[in-house]
Amino acid sequence: MSMDEYIEKTIRAYDDTKTYEDGTRLLVPEVELNEFTSMLQPGVEILDAGCAFGRDTQYLKSKGFNVRGIDLSPALIGRAKELVPDTDFEVKDVRNTGFDDEQFDGIWCHATLLHLKDEDIEKALMEFSRILKPGGILVVSLKKGSGTQQFVESFSSKSERFFNFQTHESFLEHLSRAGLDEISWHYLNERERYGQDKRDLDWLYSFAKKAMLPVNLA
Image (cartoon, rainbow, N blue to C red; front, side, top):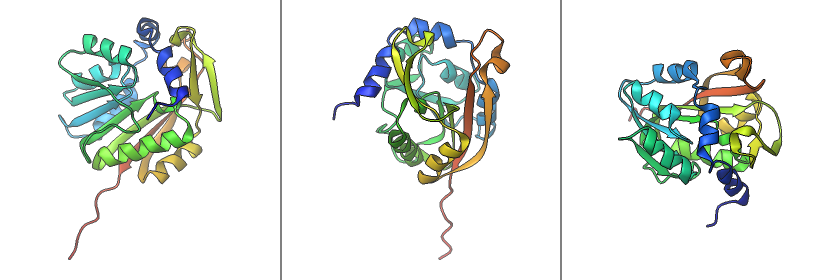
C-alpha cells in the first residue's frame, strides 16, 4: 500500500534535519513531560511516537524509563540514532506500528498527529489504544485551531507541510471514538513559555488513559 501523498510531502519537509533540529532543540516541553512521567511507574516502557531527532526520547531516558522511538522520516531516525545511542529507533507509521498488543505503559506523541487528516488521527489513536496496556497513559500535543492547511515554516526548510488544527472539543471527540478517557488538558502559548523570540502559537496538550480491563467477578 503506497503512503498517502500528503504524508509523503510532509516527510520530505523534514529531510533537512539540521534546520528542524536547530529550530526546535531548546523547545523541550519539560512541564508536560514531567506530568506524563509522574503518572507512570519508574522504569516502565514508553513509546515516543513521532520522535523526530530524539529530543524528548533523550529526556525520558534521562528519567530512567525504557524508551523506544518511531518516526516516518528516515532522515530524522538516522539523526536520532546519532544523538541518542543505545536506543531503539525505527521508521514506523503511527497508524500501523506493528508492535504487540498492550506493549507500552505510556505513549508520548508530541507534534505528530497534527500532520494527519481526521480519519488518520483516529487510526493512530486506535493503534495507540491497541498497543497501550490497560491503564496506560497517552499524551498528545497539537496546534490549536480549526481546519487544515498546507504551508511553509522556517522549521521545514522552505518545504510545505500539512497541518490539521484542533480545539480541545474537536480532539476530545477523536479520543472518545478510540476508547480513550481524557484525564486532563491545557493550552500552552509557545511565546509565553519559551520567550519573546518564539512564535505566538497556541498548543493543545491532552492527557488520556486507556481503560482498565473489567474485573471478572465470576
